[in-house]
Length: 423
Ligand code: AMP
Ligand code: GLY
Image 1 (cartoon, rainbow, N blue to C red):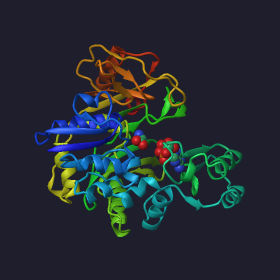
Image 2 (tube, rainbow, N blue to C red):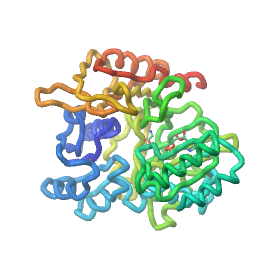
Image 3 (cartoon, protein in one colour):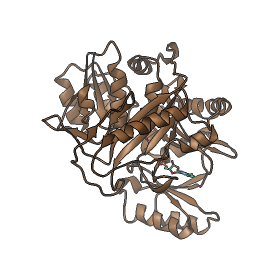
Image 4 (cartoon, rainbow, N blue to C red):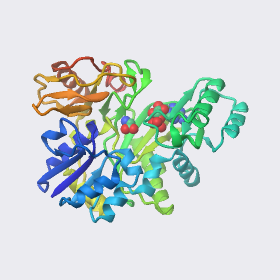
């Protein structure tokens, strides 16, 4: 089969790697792909992941048997609807279902209507109403969220009422996040360990994957600005089997059911961003796709043909599939460009030493014509290792990190430390 993967990050490289292991796969194309994906896939330069029309036109000239739009933007723009309309089967939610990530107002209203535990909240479509609400708001911190996609930056945790007012004005009056901020959500600040649970679903059956823990802040000790994610470990030791059972009853099944009842059945990978609060697990956010870097930590633990699972999700026969996971641990360390998530330079050559049996998934890299790999983004590479114990996986991932060199390379040195403390 000829496959198309849409996206260019570490997540897409991990997905391509897993798909390439399927005996049914003869060729993988990636739009636009990256320097690492180029080793296992034919990258299509000159088309962006968000250019849905161009992607469809390109695909019409190839024999694509199955497509995987893996990033949030193409999914929310309707990549699945457009490709399916051209007769190309896809793994992923259609535009209506992708709203679960694309609109916080949609997802919060869904949870309220269907009794799914989440932070208490109010929705506003004008700055005046939001500011008046804050005047009477008693407790801080308080959380202000722009409605739409905002490159992971649309969530502001305000420590004071004044900070929250500033966030409202930035979102609604200064249009800091463009049209994403025409509506906003103000919600209660929750506390507790965070757990990422990605799941496969065909719209009826939901099968959670191994749990994981992201590390979103730029610097050690969870300090510094928020990033796309600086590393992950799987499984997450805070997520016990009792909590998993509770989440299945109170969150996973009700969400799948709710989407069906709303006429927007979700097929694909549904990501539950959970907080284990003193009053039970609550949903912080949904994503309509694999998390990055969680995906890079999780997929090496999967013991089943990923293409089989993807096809079963699309064909609504996920209940027929048995999905096994290695009883092991994984650690993913992100290597970033100096300055990320703010300003950084690109174009530096990367040297790879002996990275042992660690997997190196590329993100912001480019392969030049002479074969040199150079940096081309903020998050550059992911070093992923697995082991019977978490400590071993962490050590192996960091040993690989030491072998890789490029100008300005930086990473967090404490990925997995919190998980080691609670194990
Ligand atoms: P999001 O962009 O929705 O993933 O939010 C980014 C991060 O903000 C989350 O991973 C949480 O750490 C934090 N966050 C979001 N909502 C809340 C909340 N209601 N209470 C506490 N922290 C939150
Ligand atoms: N790691 C969080 C995300 O992918 O949104």
